[in-house]
Image 1 (cartoon, rainbow, N blue to C red):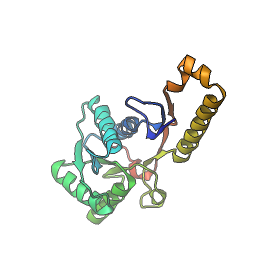
Image 2 (cartoon, one colour; image 1 turned 45 degrees about the vertical axis):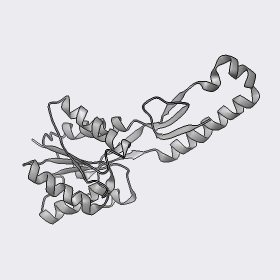
Image 3 (spheres, helix red, strand yellow; image 1 turned 90 degrees about the vertical axis):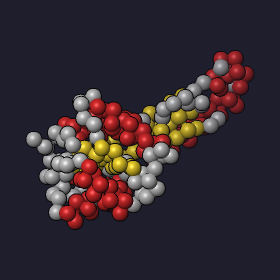
Image 4 (cartoon, one colour; image 1 turned 180 degrees about the horizontal axis):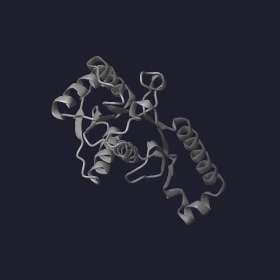
Length: 207
């Protein structure tokens, strides 16, 4: 048996354990829209090669499109660093006057957005809402604390191990019956979900 972990999505061939990265983007978009933001940017890195970051971007853009909002998308290329996040904010401010919110594909880029905002004297969240992904250790102690998404990594690992062990035990105990029922070739998808962690960086409502 073989397991695909960390994401769920297209054409599982045996076992998938993870969560929907498209749904992550949709949830972040819904949060910023509920806060009243309409001039919004999404910042990510390697979004053509990093399918998961691309899925978060797609979910984000699709959710906002349903409200008539078209976010600015900035790809930092291969640079996944706070410096790249800062540069992305500078670009976004030039391309989107009155920018109100920036959603980042990860917490590292979001940290750079926070640094650049502070350097420019932009108040977060009063003038700019910022969100990330990953809930890295510094996200709750940076200034201001970062709104982000918590994936359940430990639960994913545990469920993968449990499902593989269960499959092996079934095959050992009932190999013939599994062949007859087609059970050994069945696919299974386990969605462990994720959690939106609301913190100060996106707590301001825009009028």
